[in-house]
Image (cartoon, rainbow, N blue to C red):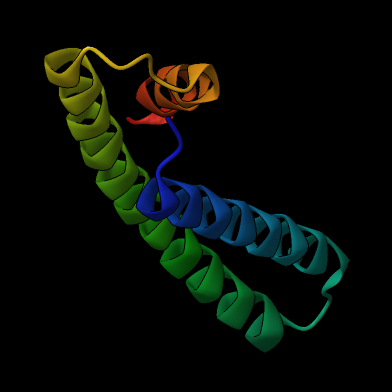
Length: 91
């Protein structure tokens, strides 16, 4: 059983991760100290956003699995994988 809100959160996670990768690349290429400082601030904001979205996604996934269990509906197996990886990555 697929769930659109969870799919949307996973897609948002993907976008934040890609933005963070782009920021890391830009930070590695920057020479100007002022620009490096701005990139570091943006990087911190992206990491915070990633953690917040990850936490919300975990809550949604856990609720989804509870619903599937109570309704005796098989869950979408890829959601298990996402939940496992998110739990590993949360510090």
